[in-house]
Length: 93
Image 1 (cartoon, rainbow, N blue to C red):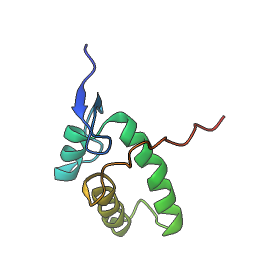
Image 2: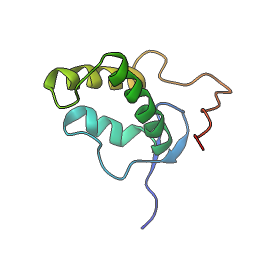
Image 3: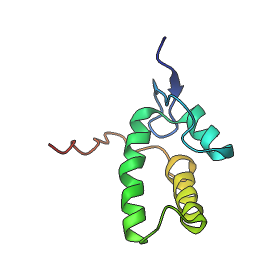
């Protein structure tokens, strides 16, 4: 099976996409259609920070309202493109 490619809204490049929508609903579908696996990996690190900073319990609807809002801003909001020359943080060893 060929790797699914998407025009990534975060990087502005054609990159490998996600295998399935990460969330149900319209936001999950938008992420599936326009976010690369590389950008999703950045989001996973970012959302950990959001959960910790806001002391969220992801099992609550209130937390998912905040997480969804942050995902919308992270991927599709003002400045969704990363700055030219951005280098992602190195993976922890």
